[in-house]
Length: 107
Image (cartoon, rainbow, N blue to C red):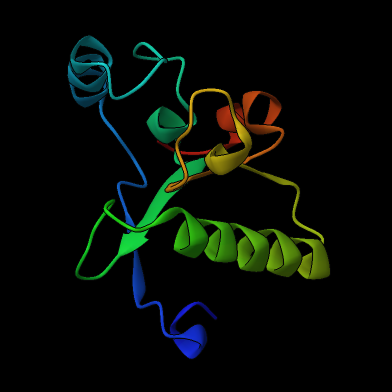
């Protein structure tokens, strides 16, 4: 859908190991320690620009957020978007109920 609007995107970093999560936490790129991130259970994804990666302007991130939330609503999927958080993470998308769903994932 974003590509249709001129924003070529791809899914990045859907599943993280505990060591990857710890590294991102220590570097300040994540507020979650190992085991506390939905990425550790396959319940989150970072969606980034195919060329610019995370370096998109705010308008483009807002458009992506709007499209993603609208599409999820149409599909009946409860998600959260990191672009709406105090810890601004506009590439991040996670299942809203990931804590209760995580045990059902084989990751």
